[in-house]
Image 1 (cartoon, one colour):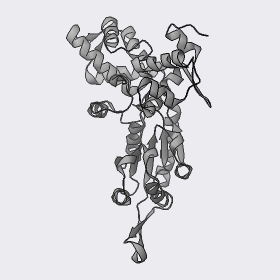
Image 2 (image 1 turned 45 degrees about the horizontal axis):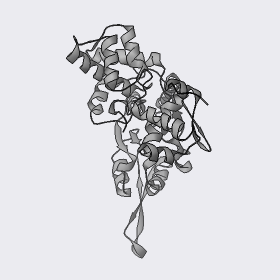
Image 3 (image 1 turned 180 degrees about the vertical axis):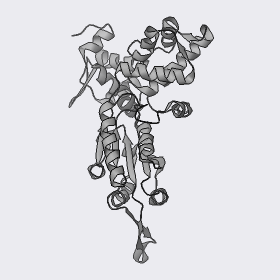
Image 4 (image 1 turned 90 degrees about the vertical axis):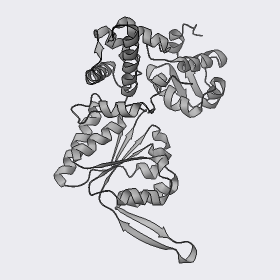
Length: 332
């Protein structure tokens, strides 16, 4: 199983932490410069027209800041935000209840929108396009359709699996933006800001770099690792994070200098040793490593691809020379 500290999916302990550390404006939000510029223009134009902003689709791996951006958009628009997720909307009545309680210009944020069932999606189409909702009352010959007028709202959808978004739903978003993994410089700035808010002392730039380099270029993971290094330093030292305590923290967590955890290394070794470096299919990797295919696809592969340790072809996954070198294995 993946090391909890490096799993980019939100965990129970993350919610209070993310609320505390969440930026409240574009000026506070570090990184994703191109996306911030696009959103600023979209929001300013909507405010000048005194209209709700266009619907927005935010794509990218877990932990990169999609939820934070949705809250900033609502704040910049001066409106309220309602937060839900694709799996939580089970029936048309659930969707009708959510939409009918929105105010004019409000933001509806649907996380994991690729996991909405098709019936909900089809009900959502006229709501997104024409701001009305068709509700079927009764069954059989006596059934009738009631048309419910909705306030003009902005739907913000977030997904980690853009390829699973249906074409009809994707086409109804006015803006589709993809969040990239962060640069280490930006991760260092995020850690510095979080340390200041949490009143955590980091001795020097080298200690900061050790945490940043192990953070998988993901803010959520960076904040988690900062907390783990803080805990270790408070118990084993004087409470100040230095190079020694940072390294010892990650050795204890079995996280290497590039942020790879045991599952990452096991996946790469399995591809190299059992499947001769690939190509090999996702299901075969999952069976050989006792991991769920969805976990590998959403948690492990995105970062391994970013590092250049993995290639995905039409025939399957291939370990690259960089992966062999990192694991000190001979490249054939």
